[in-house]
Image 1 (tube, helix red, strand yellow):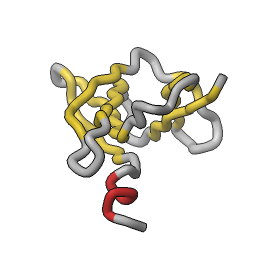
Image 2 (cartoon, helix red, strand yellow):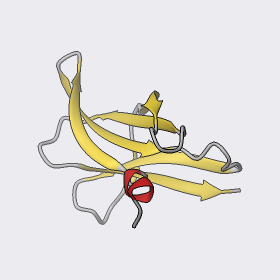
Image 3 (tube, one colour):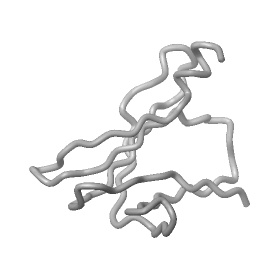
Image 4 (tube, rainbow, N blue to C red):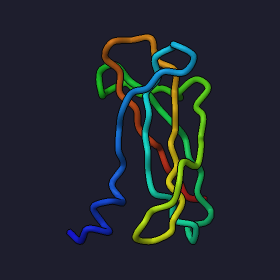
Length: 91
């Protein structure tokens, strides 16, 4: 895998927003990809996924290798163990 491809992998993390814990997912967005719908889902068990409540999408910079936008999705989370994923569908 090239360094450019490696940096395209999503990064998962946690942060806080006004003192409230949040899950984050950061990914490189391909500006040439069209006809896609992005949805954010969360789960406690990696089996039963539900639509995330109030996800926030923010551009936090650009990829240094490609110039593509870096997008961070933030989802409020009050649980000590929770997972997040981006659900992408084409239409």
